[in-house]
Image (cartoon, rainbow, N blue to C red):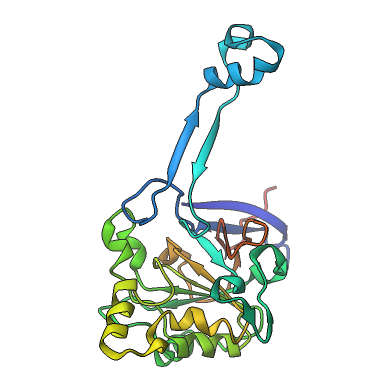
Length: 277
């Protein structure tokens, strides 16, 4: 979903007001074959809602305007369902030698800042590595700065709604993650089910090598340096530029949780609209 809004002060030189496109980068929380843990949404309709609301007073739907009260939904899901932000506490109990922070403890300024979009779409099925990250940054003529929010487009979101979304994606290497974090980046997003390679691939690598380093390497790097991952982004190509936009990705505050759902939005400036007489 993309919307365009006129907002903000007049452009320099009196050229009209600024316009922005708001690009929704989030998946919808819904039952889907793409989620291995089912999402269940039980809906309470308006008529039943009237019975519930009026129950303490001994009245029912007949007493409500139009026989209708208020609806609601009961939702059963994990904190890692659909588009969400992983906190350091998800990676391990400690980070940088102290207790790892949970999603409700992280500073808000991490989750609103300059966006950097790395276009890593293509034929490769291997994880995005540090050389690829450097090459995309060079193409964008961008040097990373603290506060940048880096988004990685691997075209995995095209499989949303299908079982293959859980199994067919690239992931990101530990070395690429380390490079981004050591460049001052606190939030890195990807459009795939997970940030590391698919579960079955990592487990097969462990079975072949017995090396624990092949198991969730980018996640486990988060025990050494504090950073957040956004998993399961969508619509990244709609941003239309590698830099020059902002990202807002505030996670929901869930007490002592390792992740929280987020409505991730790219705010992309457009040319100022003409002044009206």
